[in-house]
Figure 1 (tube, rainbow, N blue to C red):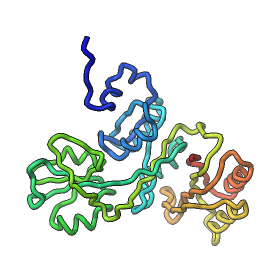
Figure 2: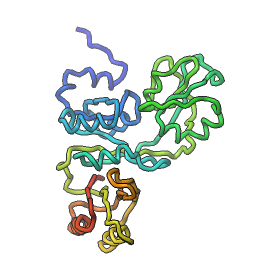
Figure 3: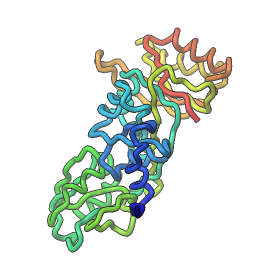
Length: 285
């Protein structure tokens, strides 16, 4: 019997009869999204489950349909991805591995469509923010319409519409701009591979946590001094409103630390006792 020929190795993997037996990872789809790209890099050989939202990707993890999920948590230009930070804080999940993915944005048009004919541009809100200078300069009158992912904008293309997608996207009949249209060409998005809580690694290079401090003068300083006393370097701190209480804020903090050392364990234990709310969100390399 003649062996079936596949255009790409990806087609061969997805057509394999072992697909259902492999470990699986969920992420935001459709195919061609940055999340899919990150999932393939973080989990080579896994079966991919493409979802309509980050919430759905986490739901499939918690219900046992997949072994891991992939979430974007920070962009180098726009800061934290708030929806995913909320999921990390609210759901019983834990980050175990990180990936910094370069963001290369391209304008997508159907073959034969000219830029001067474009009246609508579709993409994810993050992509619009990352390409704002290009859009205001080249398409000042175009209406920007949101999609759940950059890759979804490909389904909206017609004679008067364009999309913004990643450079990794390839679809017959669609032409991508030859240049990266992002305002900052050194743009990266940080993705976390997450599992169900309790799957904490024994060692780590970085830790990620969130905390709500007592609502008193200097309380945040008090928390930061805990890490100072233990000689732990903080690499990121970002605030997010506590949904249940107006005027109260939750701090997302990343720090350099090995979860397997007594120094880090002691600092985390002291911080837990100090804070009104505290959750370790991830430990990864």
